[in-house]
Structure formats: C-alpha cells, structure tokens
Amino acid sequence: MTIMQYLNAFRLYGLDVLLLALGVTLVTALLKKTLLKNAPKKLYLFLPFLIGLVFWCIYRAIADRNFLFLTENFPQTLESAFACGCAATLYYVVYEQFFRTKAQGGSSEPLSPLLEGYVPEEKREEAARALDEGATGLEGDALRAFVTQTLTAYADETVSEADIVAAAAVIAEFIEKTRSAQEK
Image 1 (spheres, helix red, strand yellow):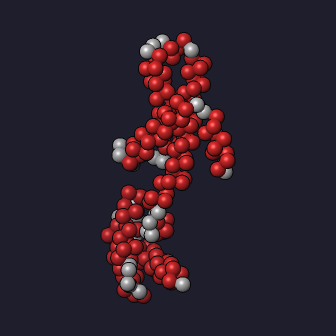
Image 2 (image 1 turned 90 degrees about the vertical axis):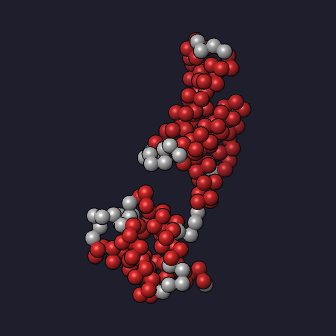
Image 3 (image 1 turned 180 degrees about the horizontal axis):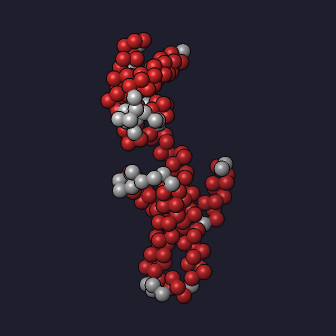
C-alpha cells in the first residue's frame, strides 16, 4: 500500500474507532512480547481484528450503560466493531512494517535466515547475535573454527556434524564478504 492509501483508510473511520484501534495495537504488541511470544505468526494476522471487535463492544456497552444496546442495534454495533477491528489491523500492520523493524534491525539480522534448518527458531536470534559479535576481528580458519563451534553449541541435536561444518563454511564466507563490502 502507498502512504496515500493508508491516509485514506484512516480518514474513513471516526475518532473513537481510531483511538480504540490504537489501544488494540498497543495491547497486541504487548501480548506479542509477553504472553503470546511463542504463538504462531498466523495468529497475529487475526488477533488485532478480534481484539478490536471485543474492545468496541465493551466500549459501546460502557458508553451507553446498556449491554442490551449491543443486540438492539446489532447492525450498527457490528459495523462499528468491524471498522474498529479493521483499523486495529491496519494500525498493527503499519506498526510492524514501519516502526518495529527499525527498532529490531540489528547487524545480526542477515545471519538469521542462514541458520534456518540448523538452529531451532527460539535460539536463532541469539545464535545470530553470538556469531556476529564473536566474529569481530576473526578471519580465515579462525573464523570458520569459531562459527563451527558456535553452530555446534546452538544447533538442533538432529543436525549432523558434517552439516554443521558445511553450514559453518558458508556462514563464515558470508561474514567475510559482508565485512569486506561494508569496509568499501
């Protein structure tokens, strides 16, 4: 989406919907970092929308001091709850695309995809950081030995030693090429 499409989408909703959607985005980001940090990534596609629906219904019930309002004006409630869920999802996508990636974008990020299949997902970022930090000042055989040792420490137990050595050679070459490209 272009920035104009985002702005047009924000213009369609009312202030109450946008404020609730912002709260939903914050709650979703908090849940992602705490209670649901090991949840499947597909959950985060629907989570802002579902929380937005619930928040809107609670908001309307409190604002009108009448829980029957939700059922008496069901089409209006559903329309506004749907709008809140959509806005929350839009906010969350904007947060993930423009703000969160900049905060996490470290120098170890390019190493993470190279570790797939060798290091379990929950250890992958830690292993990438260890490789990035420990490889400073190492070259050639010393670098390959360090990468092999680090991969062995973090690798899944089902990965063979030959696979670790082969992956270490590729990763060490990647680190050297990246480092030389950055120096130029």
